[in-house]
Length: 389
Image: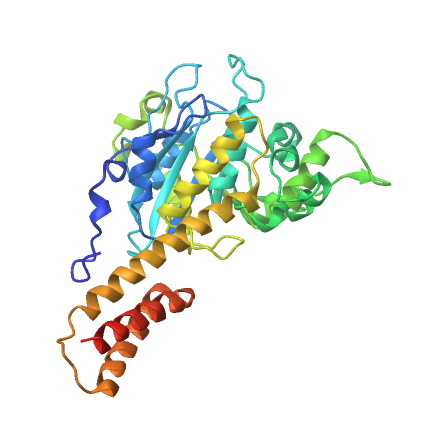
């Protein structure tokens, strides 16, 4: 990063200019795109959108990213987005963070040959994001809740190392992203028992479980239970219809002034919420940078392609191993660079040791305490080399 300008070298990458396919419709990683992500040495806020196909997910992501054109919009009954597409931007309110938007393939398209494909896409979206936007039209009624079967299947499609399925179910909430329900073309009054309520309160009211003696009345009650159990952090945003009938089918060409004022205000509320999020460390306390994210993508997609259940613990073990080695190498290089600037010979041993200790402290502070031993190792080698002069 250029400390004076606040710019990053990776900001010039193509993925910061336009959406790129990160994972194709056959769950194959696109290597060139993942390589770009790997160079992003900043904490990521990963925002993924999921939901039924042809519900305006791509347009929502374009608006959140501040783009008129970006993720491709479809104008037919067939889904436009295939696989998972990614777009990055420096957070305008927090310049040391990167926002990554993931637009995912729509769920429940009847033309898909692989019946398990939707679950694969949903699991990847959930595991890779720390904010999951679930996009649907109109209200969140029982029929809409019943269509969230992908959530009820999560415990069968995600596991933890050496943990049985029932135990994994109890641990899922520890790694789940924030669940954000996005209600499009919402025209109901937010009111309950004659009292005005917030969108969040509306979501919680919709998730109230109607069961008798532990027996659920219908599939929607089981889905409610799973949403509440797996996603302890929940939000809800409602959106007015974006435009009139004349403009609704060509939104990417519609002037800002022709969009509904209420819709623009609704989008601004969600955008403000997203832009003010703080990147969270993983359950293993690893800051999710582009490098860590790339290792997670590789581990999860490989497991799915091999017909295995993605293992969260295994994925972060791999990511932590590579990230620690990368940090160690960077610490060593920085230590050596600063040491090389010491003018030798220094005949005063105390002065030499003091110089080493200052440089060591500086490097260790920068690259985190776990690299102390590496720094001490370099110090010992250089001291020995000096004494031999």
